Length: 317
Image 1 (cartoon, rainbow, N blue to C red):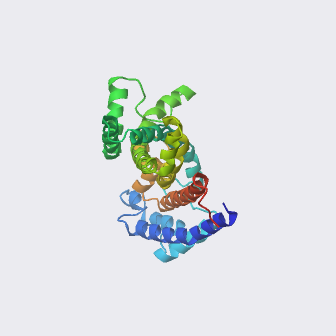
Image 2: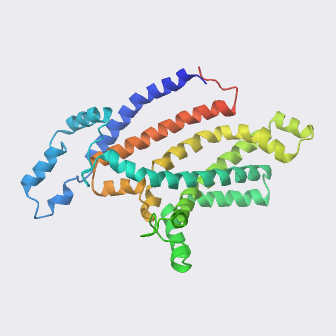
């Protein structure tokens, strides 16, 4: 793997991010409403105060001017200030990033540990009742709405059984490891379900293709056992088509699971995004969406690196 390839990919990401930022900035400003709407219905806020707030955040300027002022500040690391809280955007994101990394990291780890065995098992028993059952379970997991599953788990494990807390990051006055673990179980389960279902299908598809290859049949003919053939001959090549999906899902989940964090009142990036949407917090929305875009681009670069690691025939000059 050439270091020059990585530099070229990173360089190619710059115009892509510029285009993304322009589209996002335009869409946000074309949406109905604005960040000053929360003040207009308050009789205690005068028109002079509204004009002062608009000037402070540059909202009195034409949209093209606002974009170039935002881009100029963004390049030098000044992501602006949240209109909703008045604090720096980077500070707000940094405070919410830790919980999101904990939730997303656990969900992705669980997804990998479950999806790979399920995909391999389903492919190795192709056409059997087990394969059909896993296929049905996968399609069900992909189809179930996230918010519905979250509410169902809250009703079952919190309201009826009382085993787990219904929402939040930790209990007031506690914050121990076990307390935080009990809070993260349900949101991590919800976040990982669709991912497990999707990944297991991609892995199964790759395994089915690989198991029909000559080198796999040769391995069986040499007397190698099924576990060895599946794990050391088939799985590595079967993972190549699934790498892109897994890498993009990594970037998406870490960038913030909006619905899951909102339902479970998890103080992460996803919930911050919803709060910023409600308040039309332009600087915060741009910061969050650009961070998500960077995460997805980096995930795709990691996917290319994974291709070369899994298949020695792939080389990037």
